[in-house]
Length: 146
Image 1 (cartoon, one colour):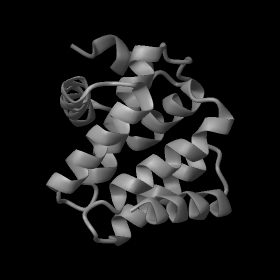
Image 2 (image 1 turned 180 degrees about the vertical axis):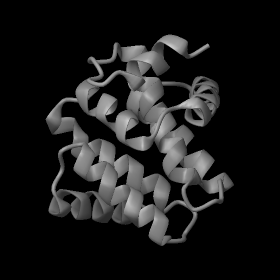
Image 3 (image 1 turned 30 degrees about the vertical axis):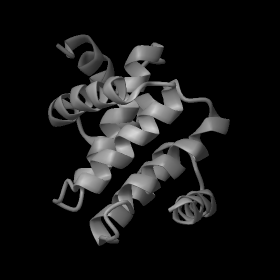
């Protein structure tokens, strides 16, 4: 189902993703962040659905369907480095901090901070071309929105 998207993600230099693929790739990265601590909590699932609905103007059923597709893609997707590089290519620089805030929102949705999640979030921020300060600001925005 996701062969062409996966092929693009696995390319040495991923091309800019078309909008439907970029939307799915973002959703899959949200799922990956949620699963990093080994617990895919209901709060995280609800947060992902809410982010997808808000960001893409989707209804609840459309958002849940996108998340469901993203769960499948995430399980088949390449390493996080290539995955995030493709998202970087698909996302304007000025939108990446907002993307990072959404990722942090999912990471903290279950009320737990895990060292693996922190490590992943630092790596993703770096791969998206964000500084440590921008990453910290994104986390603070997500915490304030809680």
